[in-house]
Image (cartoon, rainbow, N blue to C red):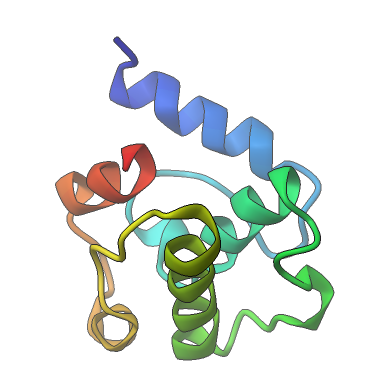
Length: 101
């Protein structure tokens, strides 16, 4: 079974080289949606145009990645893009649920 530390390291390696994505933890590093987008883009680049995304557009990034994950990959959205706007430090358990879904 993967530990939380192992999952964080996998995310860090997967997102390496993506602009404005720096995985320091499994909460605030994902708030702006870019890390989620980078993970999907790394494995399915045709699903997300990463170069069109902005770190400042938290709602759009999260809405896009949750919609793509659900519609194209069958991964249900466990977080709401609106909630990501108000969260400064996300609950790690919620994040783990999203990442391992």
